[in-house]
Length: 164
Image (cartoon, rainbow, N blue to C red; front, top):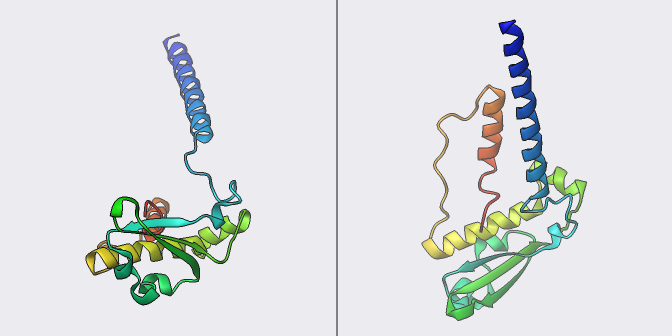
């Protein structure tokens, strides 16, 4: 008799936990902050921008782009930042991918937006500090478990995302 009551409580608790998890998952899905490339067809053509704490004549002397930006195939425009706070640089890849093609390119590491984002980040670092700053190398390069492989993939792409 005691075992039956404990089993009922266990089943009721598991059902309540599953319902709460489903509710949280639905809420999270409805409150996405950033649209994915598959849902936003204009994502691949949007401008990526940074502000560099240098005047325009130091950012692009004689109209020559800084080396990280010069080596990517991207449209680039520059403006003086509001309030005399440096230079704004905007860039976007010339090649636009949308839908499933954009998602697959990102998974394969061939997304042109990632290349432009990395070039912008390197340009900002180079012009403001004089060097392209990188994080320390990993101690272990491969992890044999599935969570370790997922971690390796996330660390390999860490420089691609985030704020510029």
